[in-house]
Length: 539
Image (tube, rainbow, N blue to C red; front, side, top):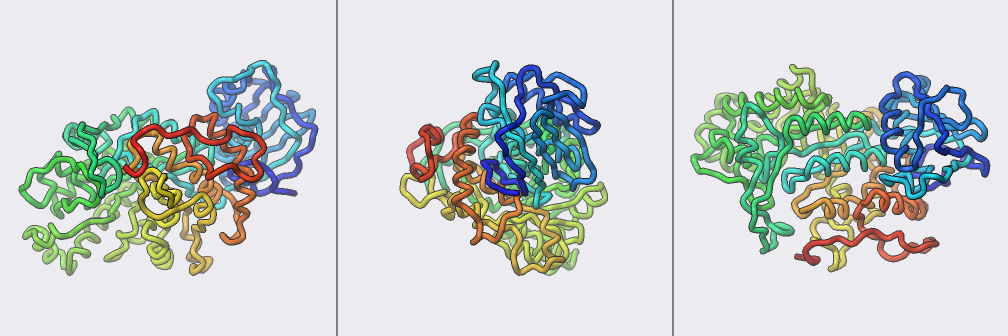
């Protein structure tokens, strides 16, 4: 057994490869067993056209065919991919998702051409060496959070990112839909949320301290039909979409649309700058009923177990000054404004639980106590996750110091919009989601990990690509593969495999950040990424 391969994420074990193998051509057939329909459709709609392979239905025992089947002796999401000379290709998965992840590995084995939209040479045969790959994920939650509130990403861009996630075996799409700077989802009973809340008059160019502005409106939103399409598209790729509606802070867009949700009589507009707005939701029964209505429509659109409620960075100055908020604190006996926020989050924890769902929020929701079924996204370092796991709460590890991909990738002056920590490709590759301080029982509460893309400084899809890749490829390996301790990880080996993976990203049209100079083992030119168009560095 060996793990020497150019696959990303790196699989658990490979037997082979050998020189003999299987040839796929226009006569290759596809047999799909029960429960493998999503992979069958994906192979025919995506892989087949890329390689000029019709992949027509055929019998299970056809020579040099592709066979798909579910094998419940394997773990959930695990797969066994067998390429046997003079026999064919078989993908066995522990469930439908496992079969799909095996098909993603097959795509990589077929070369970068398999990632194009149409074949360059549709008449050539595609050879795969004889080998057996056994693989499965380390974590059940392998996530990417995309913020579409700061800069709106059209639906087609979201679908594209779901495809990029699938290619990296990521399976949770955290959809950050609301914030101070925009409300991005249609709620039919509250039309002003999108009529007013989805547009701002102008936008800050660059980071918070930048003096530059784009003096034109920015906005957009997803209709409920758009959301249904996104959720269905994700489900076909075995990706769960977890929506986020931020409460009680980061809510200025909602208050601009419905002023009665706020704490003052001041008329507000959708916020046009970055940072944390002081305008937060009023802790009233009216606010609770309003957001229950929002969540009722949300649950009809998103079948996910978890619903994210934000809960982070809630500035409490308005509550301190509000007679209504102070009366509520006294009425509830919660002591102070922190207790009031805990009560607010607790209300929706109980409400979601009564509707068969689970609440998840950023680690501030731990302050003041948290109901047993709620989960925590640990973003302010590891401490929130450690505290939550020790208290018996499930945790998704996404510390900003390691996996906030909006942070800069190099300390050089030519790095576009140099904000946050410097986090290189190697830094992300050496990220460890499970803190060593946890016992095995506590560590079992770590559902997995997630990379976050906040889009204040990402005004278009090319900039999102540049910040995400290639670091998201390294993150995907951390989330999927059974890697050793961070100091023992073979980053040189990962970079060798990335040489091939850059070609796949090129074929997918990803505007990734180019490697910092030619890699020492690079044998051919043309592997660097595309230049980014837009404003000059350090704008």
